[in-house]
Amino acid sequence: MQIKQEIHCPNCGSKAQREYCFKTNISNTQCPACDYLMINCFRTGKVLEAYAPGLYAHR
Image 1 (cartoon, rainbow, N blue to C red):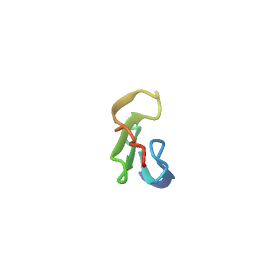
Image 2: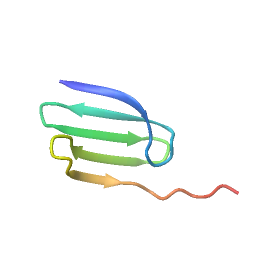
Image 3: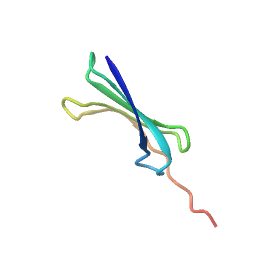
Image 4: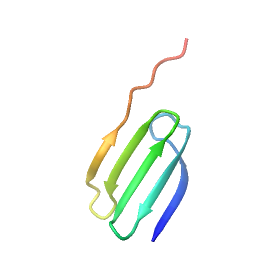
């Protein structure tokens, strides 16, 4: 079973998507605006893969 949620990106605040897969206990968070990615086990809290690019200041 999978559940998808629309959330605010923890990196940039834009709309992002979080997906839970209960068969594997894995949570996947992705943001198309800033290319943020976080894959972790929601049972143990261990991070399996992460990518969070830096944000640039707007002038």
